[in-house]
Image 1 (tube, rainbow, N blue to C red):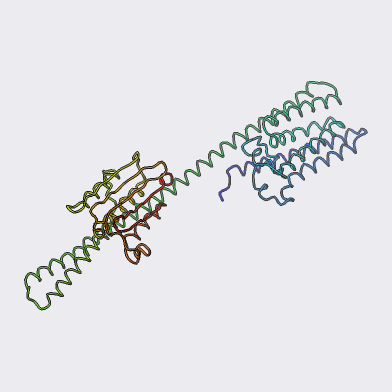
Image 2 (cartoon, rainbow, N blue to C red; image 1 turned 180 degrees about the vertical axis):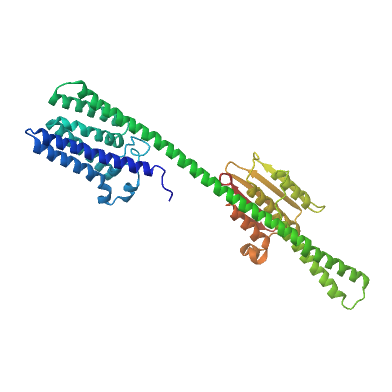
Length: 423
């Protein structure tokens, strides 16, 4: 898992605040010991208890075993992170709920009550308000966090004045501390937002890189398929064509030859193998979409399938839109394979190809009135017709769906791809 760029900053701020709170508590205790008075023991005891409660709160997630809360960097339900001066509603105020949130608020209330008790005994307790400011800014939602800081500032000023009397320092000190705490909190918010935006951009870049890598792999596969198609065309297909021509010439030259039947069988076998090889070349070659739209490519397929005994028709329904090249190529290849099945096996008189652009899907239907597809082929396409298995494989690769309805006089092959997933 990639770590957040804020992790070092958060760790430093937490450590710095822990040190600051410890130093302020030590100052309160030392000043009470040095100045003497009637409440030395009570002040020192309350200061120690306040410091213990503060650090006990930072350990609550570990003691309760709430690892999820401990892992969330700024959760309302995570007192361990309450000492991070975030003041950010983006993190510390939206995720907290349940027992962890109640524990955090009880922890905050306990710190506040102990601080008020200390302030009633010694004016030096006003120093501890600086640490409380950050806790308020983190744990309380806006505007209650700022309200709590202002109230704590006012109570600190009044408490100090009740012990030492009114003075400029008694007012300026707590007010200045509150302003510094708010400034640090707002600065951390800005830093956090920037880090979140940076992480979002990094995630987008990683996602884009993955998409580009997949596109490069797809392009490499298509290029290799095209190369194989060319190699097969220039070697196997040409060789079979030559064999067929030579055998045909032998038939014509020796019509009374005793092996004429075998020569004719060899020629017919070569012709069948040549047809299968050309079909394989068509499957390997890229879809013919260069310089034309998907509808134009389908129209050309229908035009080639038309004959004096067979009428073909192409219908385009809905508002055409540009699809990803992989989806368009799959549609063209599926149409080529389905139309080839109609031409070679269906004995159909009419065939209709329909391309439909719906709101969420694009559909391709190839319907004919031929003799239909044998049931055993439909049950086990790979055993009877490689073309159907290849069509299903293309559909599955693009996340689409394919259905076949077939009976004598009506066969419909329907393919659909979701537009949202394609986009």
